[in-house]
Length: 252
Figure (cartoon, rainbow, N blue to C red):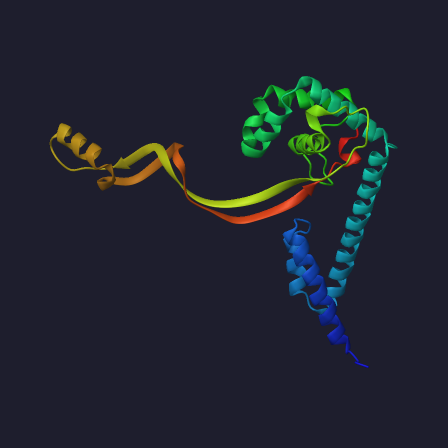
């Protein structure tokens, strides 16, 4: 039988927790500073970190189980929230334009605000008693809510089914956090300050306008424009997270 010293147990526990946290960071579930603090902690500090991680893990587990119970109620037809979803999906059918809206949210997300279908989808939330405000526990804003609703609308038949009949199958939507490095040309507007020598004013003007940086001693910029396309583009980081259709996010 192998006997472990206290120091060995500490190292085993710490290594195991670091592996778990690293995987959770990659899935967007853990803040990096929690991982960093644990990695740098000494033995006496480790157990304090462990308590924090244990509490975090319990919250994550409880939230997961609550979500699964809510989904089961919706799919079994035993949920008021599920009935509201059916009415909301029927409303989306009536106003139309949902395929165009979903495509716009996936390809040009910043342009969706001007689409009639987007405004209509938001307006329908209030009609069925859904809340459009930011939901802090899962960090869902109004666009997140509309997108996860659209994903489930199409997953359950979209424009071609009767939502007041038959089962619903609830799935999470995917959101991606992306960091992209790039180069871009910029036009700056400003004033250059300097001095020049000579006895001919017109010649001084010509020389300064031809090569102002030869005379510049100081400058002040007051505006700029970005011009042209991004160049030298490179994805530096991409992480996904699930957008879950949770009842609490839509409650008034």
